[in-house]
Length: 209
Image 1 (cartoon, rainbow, N blue to C red):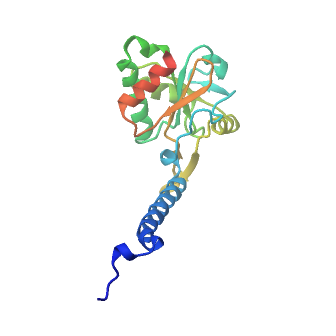
Image 2: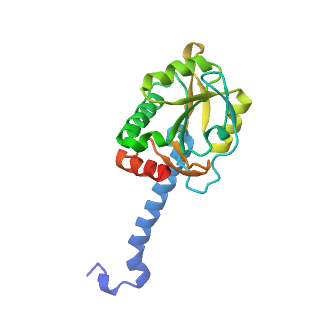
Image 3: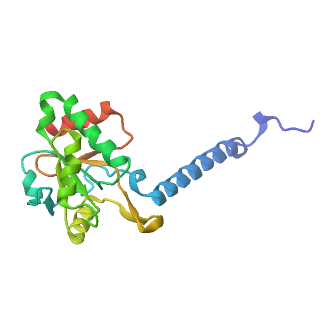
């Protein structure tokens, strides 16, 4: 007889295969986290409630007026960061928010949608005004100076990176989550780019309740 009866193995010998499986799962999880952190932008993990998201800011609206967090006092709002030349994430997100607002029916107008351009080198207030008018729903389009934008990006934990392209142009890698704030300006949760509409609607109902 060359083998060992499994029933006769000591306890550690029996557990060793299970331990190796757990080690493999842990290694895969660590690798996934490393890839996610490196990729940045929309693949970054969304913050959790109570994560200290939000706070005072001063920006410029698409009509040229100064807008601060106090401009939204008493109303919940959904705030999103992007740029008008964004090929996919920004137009998809804004179109989706417009549809979710319509899906909420009479409650759909109980919250504001806020789009903050993080590309001050290209997006002027008038550019943003034309852009948000394409989505057939009221959207507050905002931008600001580099320092003003840096301040709000830090307050919301937003990832932004200018990425050079061939020919001297550039694109902007950025966070893709929509941040949901209550009527007191407090962070509630996010709507993830890949999240289902049913879940997103439930989150919106929470902030307008």
